Length: 354
Image (tube, rainbow, N blue to C red; front, side, top):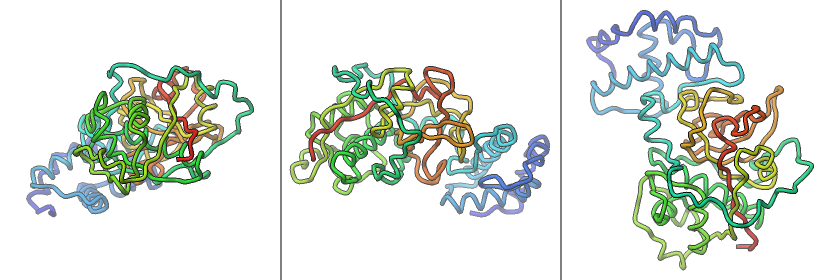
């Protein structure tokens, strides 16, 4: 749906103060827009139309489109203003640019830390005595990380975090990288977890153990919504098992790195910040709290230009961030780490070749 001449007049309600702010954009092209896009109403409309085409956006009515354009402008203002002030990372126009921040948080998070706590097995943290850590680790390069997935607007981040950690230890133990089913967890792990309404990774590990394994993604594909549990068919399909799981000591970055040097980890972070929503690249060292609301997977660590970071696999698709990943600063001087990354990490264990 294009804009008519009369519709364009509606956009002139766009404030002069916003135009003035955007006109002083950086001289180089920021991800998703350039300074020339910000100099006129026509430029902004054309930018919105091209962004819609890029992300396959369509709206039910002109009124809805106008509403989304207003949100787009507000998000663009935030992105542009932040890009003029931040140094180590940058923001860009991604598929979330037509959402209000409240809509984004409601649709794309899903960690439920208020669930009854029974974190961790009774066994001791297995990597406590690890010494001589490598300077960097990247489990993607070691073949233990599947392609970036997309949870969509289902609050199932907990399932994606769990599955990525299990995929990692399974590859490390067996040599086989197998994409596993988040949908099985969403549909069948319902004692404490709540499908698209959130959950916790440790409970999902417990379900996989009690269930005798987790099916392959090809056998139980993702629906982006809650479905009917098909777990009774598990005997007809190959499954991947784990032996147990452990928690990393809370607020202990040294222990987190010891574990991460040996396998990918399920971790929890606060991802509801607006900068996180539009993160596009660099080492993220922005402002965020420690109210954990999103499950992700740590898949390595390293350093660049004097900044130490942890490599985090997200579940918002490959168009977000650095092809679906974010590098989050470590060695912040705070025990809980940036966005609470050190507060609630855990990992599955595996001894069997199955």
